[in-house]
Image 1 (spheres, rainbow, N blue to C red):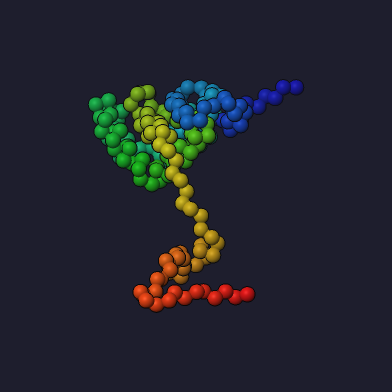
Image 2 (cartoon, rainbow, N blue to C red):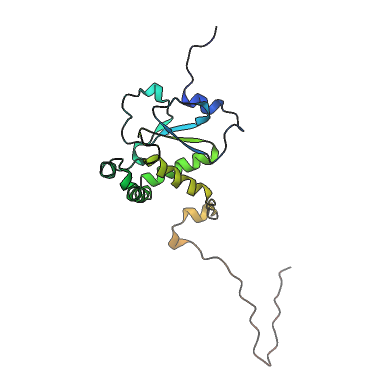
Length: 189
């Protein structure tokens, strides 16, 4: 007997073949469009839930309200195309501050592993926050990854900085003043 259970977004992500998604792919999709297996990790990036869409129909893996533009900026923009450039600039500034910066970093890390689809509710497909967020994410994906700092020993980590020893450096051997014989080191045998 065939299963009548509908696959969820999480099932689609697990079932996707390893070579089926391209790492670093960031897609955009309106909340009113049906989900597809190629969407990968689907995340709603609006502060407000899209009107008339049921949770099951949206099939999202996460809803990151805090990554959306602030209520003040969203209301000021009002999806007027004439305000687009200023909106994009202000929203980029918001994406540099916490908690949005941390959430954007998480999405970039996830995009490095596979496809991420940013789901949004706006009618205008060219002038909305998901477009700005995608551009910011793609810019970060092109940057080389930062290297982790060198690991410290457990003893160094346990001591407070004021109690840690400075690294040992060898001093060059002192030469005796002119006319005095050079001493030889005595070895223990």
